[in-house]
Image 1 (spheres, rainbow, N blue to C red):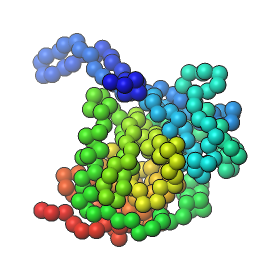
Image 2 (cartoon, rainbow, N blue to C red; image 1 turned 90 degrees about the vertical axis):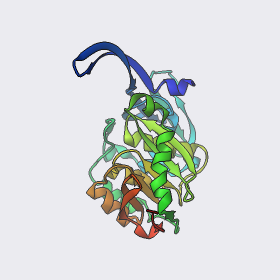
Image 3 (cartoon, rainbow, N blue to C red; image 1 turned 30 degrees about the vertical axis):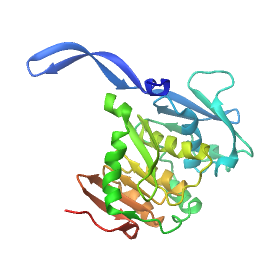
Length: 273
């Protein structure tokens, strides 16, 4: 078992109650710790996250906020030079694309991402409609959540982690990352692709383990994704944004059924009975 996997999980003493029985036991928990993201020596954001893949999380967050445009904007990323705990620093080649200090201060909880004023207007300006005519077979939509779930090793142990998988139209899963925050899992997945030199991501789709919030569709849109498939429900603003960006948005994908909220022309075929 590798160290990165270990960092996702902690153990705690608990009392189990099962009917009339009460007994002492131990349980495995998803780790949650703060991470400060610094850019060019200056603190930018603090997020509550599950340790591991911090570099991918940092660059994925910057891309998801439209602060960098791709791999060429990143000169270096790693632990802070002063070795401060839970701090990751991104060095850019030309600075951020815009100064975020006048817009909002970034503090992210593990339950939701940044919901700042003007976010929808910003997406309308910065993210073009999804490129290309990438489509998914209905069977791929139905199958991907189950396949992604089988890859969630830390969730299997703790039951407390979200996941985002990025996959090709044919169903090939490119990357999957877990985190206690659903938006962090998306940032880690997108950031991993960016660090590998692939960004933006036209024709690629995302599968998320929970609901489809506005923040997730926002990040998917800025990454150039063709759509998002969610195990849970979408919000009204998520549907509005997906329709504006001409993205696929599916919800309640489970038990060989799903709802299509946006981008139905990107679905081909149907499901066998």
